[in-house]
Length: 81
Image (cartoon, rainbow, N blue to C red; front, top):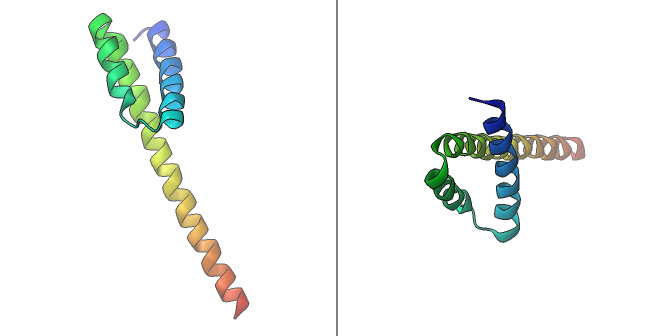
């Protein structure tokens, strides 16, 4: 895949995630993908990959934070005893 496609897909994914966060429309990226697909299948595929990676990272990060918070709460409870 060309560097141009990769960089455009990454930037578009960043912007799309910002819109999704602000509007609460968590499937907005599907609409963007459809628009891209009508013009460039290569860019659509790169964009969807970028979105999937970002969504997966976000979900994993939430899990890590949740586990760390639970651990810290447990440690605090032990210290209070």
